[in-house]
Image 1 (cartoon, helix red, strand yellow):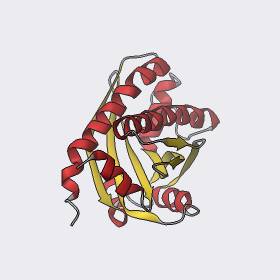
Image 2 (image 1 turned 180 degrees about the horizontal axis):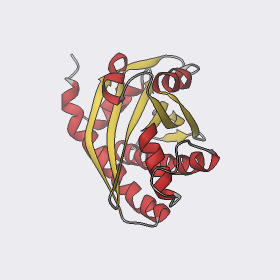
Image 3 (image 1 turned 60 degrees about the horizontal axis):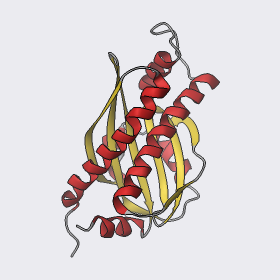
Length: 200
């Protein structure tokens, strides 16, 4: 009989905290301002209930999507709700508040860089904590409805586990707060590998 998923929460929070520690320095350098990041929640959620946590299936969002292979394989995504994405782009481009209403090519580049830093930091944390080899592919940026982002990103991946690792983050850049969600959709078999390496 497998242990309840709640037993893994502390380990997840540690992974999140290590990932945040890795990301803070890189983001601060990229943003050229003081940055603080917190992990309000780290959890496993059923794949059919993910929208109850990250938002409405039709909600527009920006996302960085990346496939990973190796000892741990699957698809990871970092989501920014549209308004948060616009706020972040406005802050990074030093534009007047409210002046950016759509995400153009420059905005995509900015969000891609931030998302790449965050996903890379979390992957480094997971790999470092579990000693599993994780080989990331080139990340991709997409802007669409949440449901479309997830369905299209998983379309060609084969079978995935019915449990998703979800880590919520809050990025504080001076007086600005931007939240996002990190989700790891595991290929079948990889979740068991992660649990085994966590030793719980």
